Amino acid sequence: MLLATKLESLLFVASKPLTVKKLAKLLGDSEPGVLTALKDLAEKYSTDSGVRLITTGEEWQLATHPDNQTLVENVVKAEVTDELTRPQLETLTVISYCGPITKPELEQIRGVNCSLIIRNLLIRGLVKEVETGVNLVPTYEVTMEYLRHLGLTNISELPDYAALHQHEYITKAMENNQTP
Image (cartoon, rainbow, N blue to C red; front, side, top):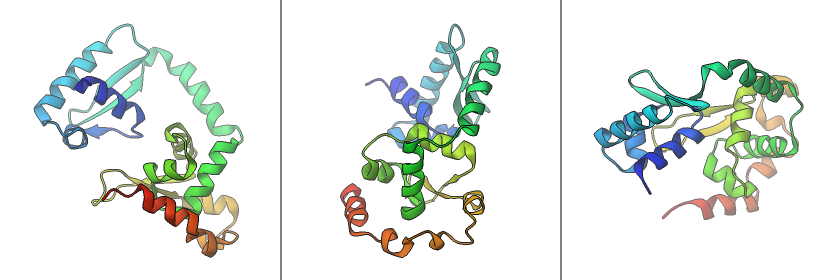
């Protein structure tokens, strides 16, 4: 698979801008090679595309074309103001009881890709992404806004939190996701 297609995939699912250094580490490639591929992608997206590859010089991110701003704002506004869907509620429940949790761990438990759901929960301010120096992937946990919305002072006040936070099925699923 070409480096450019791998970069596109990473930038598509990333919820925030990524540095060349981080991208190179994730892809196991050189920083100059990644930078060249990013510049090629930026050129590819410069015309006749609904997305753009934008950069601050240090960080890179896929973004929507500025001419589509109104359309995108209307869709995002609907996502934020509409009621949570069943998959969003399920994902939020798993994050609530198992967090902090990585996206791969969350997907192992749910059995489906959670990228768009996580993005929506981040936009709504119900979960937050926490970078750890240990993992290449961030972890997700609920926010103060989430606790405030539920009227809780602490996550442990959720029903059956102690039992479900350390549930045998969840622990086993998380262990199965670990790489040796």
